[in-house]
Image (cartoon, rainbow, N blue to C red; front, side):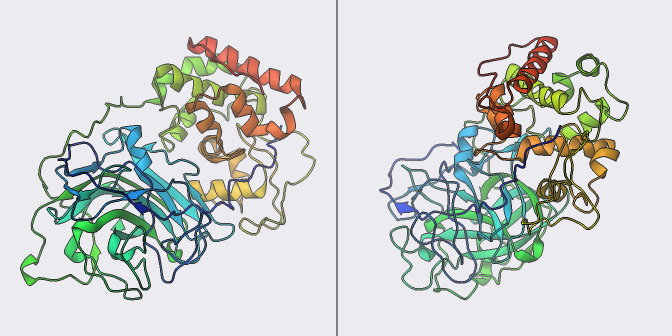
Length: 500
């Protein structure tokens, strides 16, 4: 069978909210990571209006995934003692992050909804990750708020900051201060949001990057403001329209207090390019209240013997090795919660796979009624001579899903959709991509499981319009039976809310 036409949130614009200043505390700060709220972006030229009201950081209308935030940056703020800003290991830190973009119609960016970090590497564990394409005004990116709803900090003791990053990507890195924000968030009275920024080129592997405050410079199109670290409220990491599509990771962001190169010259630098290598010491990193995250190995959740037991009649095209390799690309898959919760997500995924593919027996949809070309979708227009019927473990269908999956996987799936049924690795990657990223009713199948909504919520995401609410009770029950059987094989409880 095929998927119902569920578009990968291509019309969602994820962006910004204006922040309000709150009173600051004068107590000494601790060594917990700084920042537990969403943030505005650095912006391009001009000013726009927010979908939620108030000014935004860049041209064009934007919407937001975050809540209204509180900004510090006055002389009453406590001196920040911790070098560490965030390592993303504690989920409470994720609230400090938000996506930001120019709201181009038809463009897409992940993550959607509330920001959630993803597993990246065995040593870094959780990292910030965003992907997207189609933004044509100033672009898109991630914002990290440095203030909490109750506390503000004076960052003037620091000379810059460092972070780990992975691309490839050409980032504009901005340090936004209250001086470029209009009231009530800041003190700008002219053309606002011209943040101090520089460019950073990320390589294909994680590396250390250092940005000194004296490297930052405004774009010159807004009100001129001297950079003052005590007024710092937000870091923004953006890509421009020329760098679409984008796919980059950030982690281990911390302040430094080492003297910047050429610090004796005085004044701000011209904002040149920062490249990889040579992380500075910057003092000790605070503990940050981080939790220890065990190294995630998919093979610890599902063995090859269990895989073969679940699918005794599978075809030779679908291999355990390729499934494992595919999950390496989506490192938060089966990696959230305790071991039982992780295995429940794997079981839910495989249960839907079992139903959709006939127990991994067929690669292509049986007797498709059409070529599944949505001619109204201009972002991923159908390629001449191609059809987009269901293929692979989760029977990926429709041109917009093939197009979005192709962007995420860096494969020409819109032009050559047959790859999903002929390449043993791509077929699993496309299935896991759909599980992780395809949205229905404001959630993905992945988010439904890690939020504890139960297996029934994954049916709603995948084919709810066709099956749920009494439309196809026998198919729903088949999915539930697959799930119950797999949970039994994995030795875990099923949890609640199994049906839809």
